[in-house]
Image 1 (tube, helix red, strand yellow):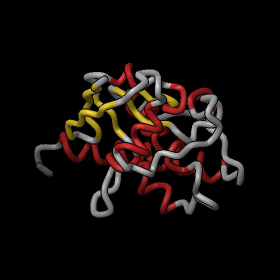
Image 2 (cartoon, one colour):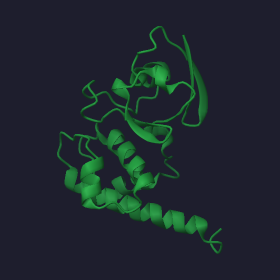
Image 3 (cartoon, one colour):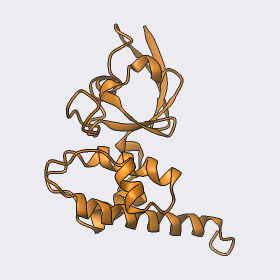
Image 4 (tube, helix red, strand yellow):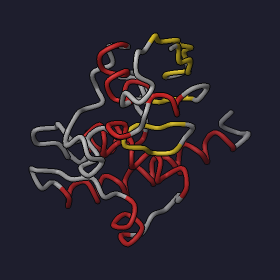
Length: 165
């Protein structure tokens, strides 16, 4: 069966034998985008988090058939080295990663949160960012989430200010 979707803004059609194949494996093995990680396979750890139509989903348990006609964004589509997303920039500035394996999932979950809550409180973060980090960098992640919110708000203010346009 053929599944068509937009991944990181580009149209893709994939031929898949089982429509219940997790989207994670289509992204990694067929589209060769390796930034999204496999962690647990049970939608518990969040390493595989990406966006489908702007919503953070756990791609290890999301059947590819549900991505038909949707916009999928992976960590590769969040920003670029020349123009990083505020979440990526904040992670670098706050020196968040240790091993780094879980970081793409955390960044995708954070980016989705910031689209809904411009200035998240610690409680908002605790309720929405439920990914797991084996290295325990949660304190630095929280700092980076607050910094990313500030960077995103500055970016938004600059883009709406006619003097800066």
